[in-house]
Image 1 (cartoon, one colour):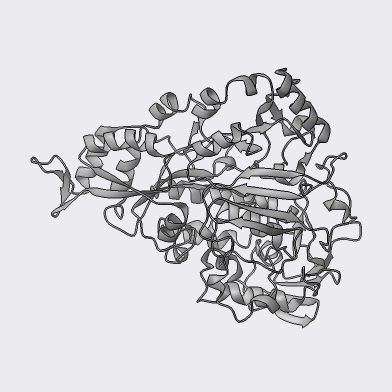
Image 2: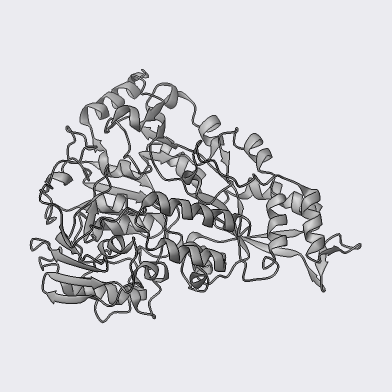
Length: 583
């Protein structure tokens, strides 16, 4: 499970100057340094999981929730140290890297077992690889990192060898990061239909109950094969994880205040500033904290489908960026809590190495001029812009009401220059299907980030036509492709980051997104009844690391019940947590 909580991060590979076997002889299985020493097993944690996804199969539905759920059930060959990010044993307890950095041999732990008692074998690994790479399977985003490998060779029941077609700093991560599936269960089935039932697993949790569209539970396995590993003590403590689904975040917040949900991450400033108030907050029955750690900074924006008219013209895309009044939105809707994006890789820039990209200002005059240059002329009868008989009218694909207040402001400014926008609202599953097929014109997309950047999946030209992938805008640029290829053979992280900054500056000038904003901390609300590590969250993780490190504290639970019954306050907790001050 540790592997899963940081699976969204892209970790550094270990590559020696000569052929080496890992882990090194000095490695010892030691307790997780973040885990609480007084953590206990038991209880239930009730969570908000967003909208019901189209699939729980992460290989088929690349969303945050499915990644988390799938990762508790299916393990990777290698794990990661939560502090150093060095590789640690997972399903494999030993691995070898050739001196040319192109061959990776994994020796599976002979103790590793599926939940039906059968051993995890190299044949399972090979079958999983073949399944991901099968052109019939809708596993597009996962094909990107594995295409560099020839089909792996099964050397014996517990040994498998991956040979790469080319040197790539990512290769060990890619091979070691495969979530292995049981061949004896799924072989012969249509993989695209394996969505919600997973009868045999290897990980520490299994699916318990499913109430479609309402909730799903995960149950802790007492018979998990690696239960007694020292690095897995004090983590994965809850017997039950209950994930609750809501179409709208506002309904989830109401359920949270009623105690039906235990943890609520806050993504809207109005809720944080205005709605997280009242007796429960003032009495410290509900904890309100900002956590500052080393979580990589992603980006969000209005993605434009560059494959289709009218966003196939860079002048139009630039105009769309100048028509979004981000400063007004930040001031009037978000209490100036956010910084405005000027990069797709915000955390690659520092005070000593500042971002050279200029902040895109709200500028209607500039937008009008760009649209005029692109051939758009206002119809004097309708006021709408037209080009070759086509009106500038487009669909904005959205999946909930969160965007409405922002889109209302945007729509007014678009209308003022002669552009009509129509809202096309769908649920998450329908939205995801449309995105897989590029069936959209503009949508709001938010992306997580990795510690070490690999721009290929989102920005390589060859990914623009891969359905179900991450290059949703259809971005293509020969210079970016050249830099992506060049960075593959660079093992020095800082050199790669320098190249990623070059890539960022090229992308920025092509306007694939109308960039939005972000915040540099995790805003978290939770009922004051849990034990937590001193750092509350992990070094690199978001609110999901709470599900891994927290535990049910009976004393805190009793104190909360007594305080609520007597209408008395609990001792306050620190409103801000800084990881580096506590670890």
